[in-house]
Image 1 (cartoon, rainbow, N blue to C red):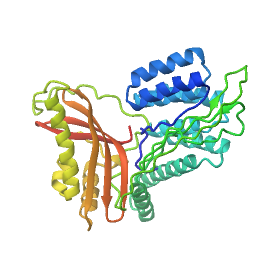
Image 2 (cartoon, helix red, strand yellow; image 1 turned 90 degrees about the horizontal axis):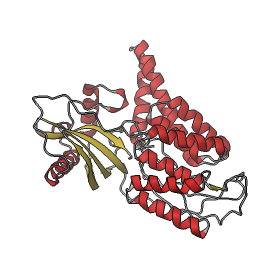
Image 3 (cartoon, rainbow, N blue to C red; image 1 turned 135 degrees about the horizontal axis):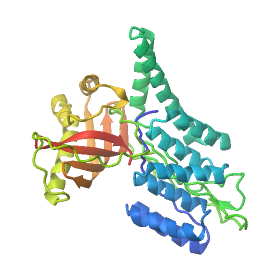
Image 4 (cartoon, one colour; image 1 turned 30 degrees about the vertical axis):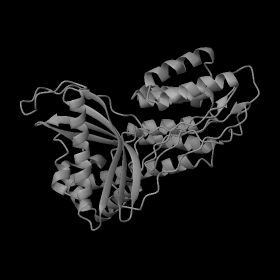
Length: 388
């Protein structure tokens, strides 16, 4: 499993059913696309009050809960969908994404195997299963080295797995609505729901085909396909450091509890002020600039004392790995867009953005969530997640 965390990045597709219901679902989709997740959740609950078994709306409700960092509730929604509609592969896939975020890789593997069993040609599930196997292999080699640190073969295999996950630039992805998606062959009177589209960092959330409520069967609306926009073409480059697997994306971490008073921490500015948001955005842009300049010292200075490196590395090993990657021959270009300070709580802040990374032999684009903390008068990174 590579560095795409579910957390997922959500892309919506058109859902066309009966004229009345199409408007309602389109309104729901518009709310989600605009980031009005609380209103979208209320809208979904209203629709389900009249059609409690509607598979499409239930699936979108699970996606909304995932985006709201309510992973436990999202898991419950997708689990119930797998019970009510076991022939649909998308809920299994999204369950796997959420389990992967929680590092429950065995559960994620089982869910993906069920998705493939119901739909053997489901490419997303096959790819996600490969990422899960890579993560399980990494854990097994770590365990082997913990028992015998002199095992050179295990060391080589572990390095190979980590390099593969790093270069892959992606992690287990949720399912996304796809245009012209065909209804599952076993579902009667159902209109397929497009699966959410995933960027190159690929967490994917895929809504299942609409299923007619029981016990009254209604004629299926014409199947509709959702188009997945391709990522922007970029020149190939070396992979950035893999983000921790929460993710499908996961599920995203809840806002950190207020830290104990630290005399070294600068006085907390007022929350949500334009000046504070500007300082946070400037810190994030400075981090990307140091990365692009390959200024290792400046780049590492943007990470706080509480930063937890990915892949189970300790801080020293992680810094050595980053130093090795940044000092490789060739230029690096890191561009950020849609940088948005989504929350500020005292000395803690959360930023969401779109990151484009390019080097001589790799290019990736991914949505990223960055948690920062104010330390010694400077905003520094304490957590990075791909997706969200």
